[in-house]
Image 1 (tube, rainbow, N blue to C red):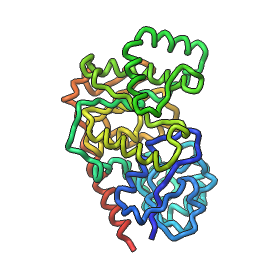
Image 2: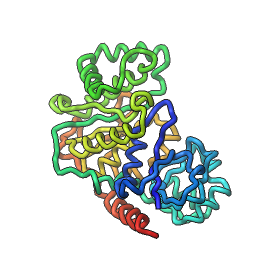
Image 3: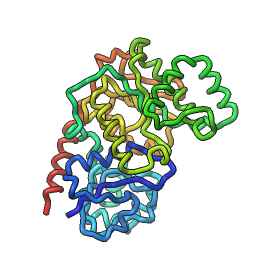
Image 4: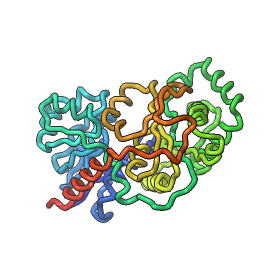
Length: 346
């Protein structure tokens, strides 16, 4: 029987974090048994198959629920607040009840399903199991800063553009180092043109935050990455999976990772790489509804604009003293067992 692995083509932008979620499922499978299918077109599947249903399915909710040709394992499943009406409809609840219990990536999703009478529980995220395949004993001196600030709603406002330009001029040397670093893969574009101006603003703010977290010496070891690309920068699913694996290998060997993206932070937790998660207090409800339960697995630093609001560590960091909470491990072990048992199930 084929196992479906999800792809995410067809959008103007691509989030490599989505492909990292797919790798978390793919790591347990033999390649010859894999069928690649768009996450939002599971209703079109016309062959008997299985699927590990980790992730969220909100971009085309009209295509939910999936085809009855798919036998699903619900673990690390998320229902976003933007699609509660569709994914908590009577039709959807009837579907969930056929495949109970439903393992949920966040406690909010579990609570919403429980309110509808579905047997649901908090499973944590499947990306915390990525150490199963991608763990590395080799470590480098590199500190990866990955989308430290991803959301700047005011970046396109006229007066704010002048503000970011001024901040750049005042911190030009450090910000230019960040820009050179993120351009190093030869794919990622950032400049002052309208198309990439938001990227420029994110790097400016990322630098202003990170320089408060790290010593001047540790800043010399920073490499800047982004998991968000335009679709034309990495146009094929094959290239996106390769980029996702490249990121995982980098994270596995890192001295420290600093990020605002849960699909950087949670994989690093599973890889046993020290990681600091930056919780942006300006984030939208569509973003923050994903966090309940997951933040307990992470070192969380709260930020708002350029300010550090709260940190579990003295600033600047003594990196050698940073270790991840061990709370993820029992969830990860349970997820690994469930996935392996599901794959063996006839």
